[in-house]
Image 1 (cartoon, rainbow, N blue to C red):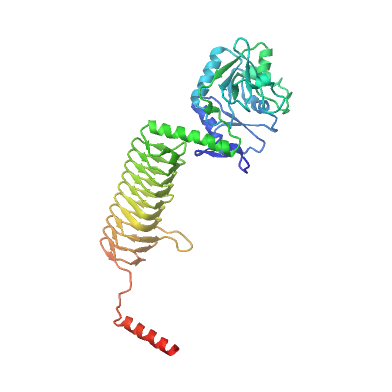
Image 2: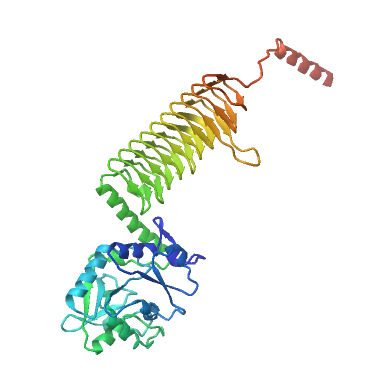
Length: 450
């Protein structure tokens, strides 16, 4: 990956790569999930204690990696082995593999796929009775013969094993190959040598086993995952106007009849209700949007947007923002850590930070809450049905009562009582003849310079 970030921790549609196969295993009903990590345990933080962790002290191959987890396997278990860098595997395929394995009575069942170009994959060599005789690796020259290289059925790296048979075979695996590694597929040959059957289950969709070893492959897998995410939402009743110009993370929730307009990105734990319109050109990160709302040309992170709310265009909603039912955050409005009441409007050109605003209030253009005094943040409280005129600044901490007004251009530094008009500006003075005096002075200075 040419990265300081461990491969399996690179993000894929909102999740680290490793979380994808773990999620599939959990959805398939796995009783225990074990992730094999390196000695630095870099995956532990991402997995957050949700699975068991085994440590492979040295990178001696896939069989050695499974051997590192053998103390967590019981003889009566059905053990499924999945590559951590194959994130597109589905719970349906995992269940089907287990069903095929347990139904056959085989000691092992290998998931295979048939590829037009099998280059780089281990080839599946079948016995005369159709069972699997062995898997031949092709990582280095000399691993496989010319005839074996012509085989198009390949090993996906996913297996189902009888627990006891797996444990016994792992003890016999040797590094007799060009790479000097302990290959997990070698257990199949060992099992057959002990007169045990090895079966195969062919996957219908080769995309499930797409692996990631560099950023090119990461982009290819992300494109497939994104297409699947889009299809899932569209089948559920969401309109995505231009899927090619839309990014939606795996864990995003969207209700039916919502429209996602082009150049919109939905990330993290974002949840959107029914009948809303998001975009164009909107980004939502860990945001919540209710039913029937519109979020146009906006950047929203960590905010809660209620039902029938209007946001944008060109609005910025920061963490801690709550817009209640029927409210509005309009053009060039920034709101941070504030609760905006039901039906309240912040139409344009305003900054609202650390404020609590009641219902049916209207804040005029260029309303500002000055929430920081250079040392601490302070809150502004604005009641219900308040009308602020343009260019009003509230210097927190300050409280404005219900049904109060402010005069245009006011800097409010003390509380305004309920129903009062707050005026905080100098009285206007007009100086007659000012423009003529300026012209005369300029003319005199020019003549003197000559």
